[in-house]
Amino acid sequence: MLKKEIVHFDKIDEFINNLAEIISAPIFIGLKGEMGAGKTTLTRHLIQKLLKNSKIVVTSPTFTLINVYDETPPIVHADFFRLESYDDLVYSGIEEYIFDSDYIVIAEWYDKIDFKIPLNSILISISIISEFEREISIEIVK
Image (cartoon, rainbow, N blue to C red; front, side, top):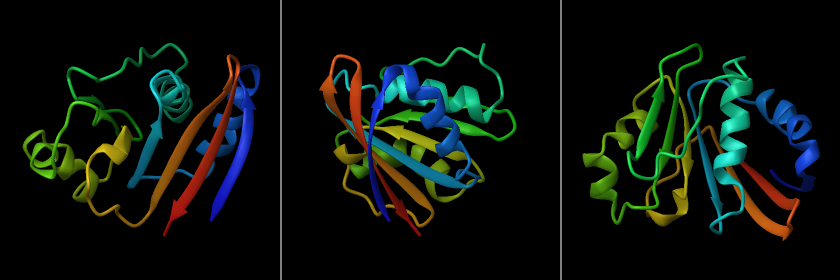
């Protein structure tokens, strides 16, 4: 299933609420889009919604590669931007979370690494329309 939607920033919470309704662990959620498209912003809102905690601090794991939220549900926020190969995915420990865990794994820049997308995944592509609008495409992999 492929769904496209134009989302204005002041409607992000409505979009996140709808997305959160179809998410349950274990699942892989891949995000792609150009720099500044809003991958981390979307991830921040989604993690806060899933954990029912709007005060939780969600930062980009660009340099740490992975942030783990051992809450209910357990969530891993990963960033593949600095990875160069599947071996990097394995050595970083991210691969284990994707394929052998009960976590919700949210990965920014997932398209940088060639790997088999697991079943039960949601792939999200974000394109900049204007300063305050994004086109978001969602593909569900069963």
